[in-house]
Image (cartoon, rainbow, N blue to C red; front, side, top):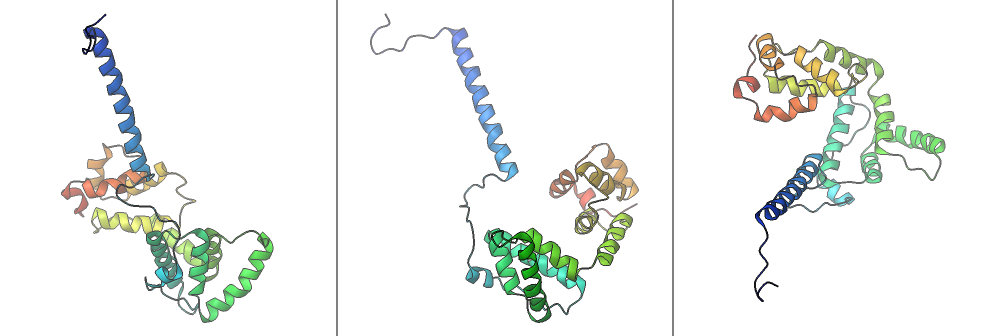
Length: 232
């Protein structure tokens, strides 16, 4: 029996095993923590808010849409709305209500008649989601012919005189009109790489990036000669 008040001595081999086990546990915990950070499951120092009020939404000065403007303005209106929704953590139901509250004139008349038809199709108990609203809105105010034109612009897109950062921004803006041509991240990354100027393409090809998301996430950390380059 060990003397009272003293901890029994742990044999060296057993002590090393305990330390190794603790190291593995800590490493696993750290890995899970950083995975959650990367996936957006947690944000340090910020309390997640769910939902927003009409007053909060109005303070962001959301634009109105009257349906008389050109198709590009319809797309810009949707983009601005989504920027506000993201900042305020609006729920899906609030997105539809607050956005349609800012439709005026022809657009408001269109929505009143369209909402009745859509609700009839879905059923009274089924809410109209933001994605559903956005689809029917853009189908009406941003016609297929213009969307196809944007898709062609995407397929013909190359860096030319743009910096890589400028090229990446244009690439992402146009890529959403050609999702059927780039069905996965690997195809999107290949298209992005092909559009780069030759000397830059040759330098980065060795990195074997097969995910367009990795390209974009890496741009802020990329060497200056890449992000600011526009040479051939």
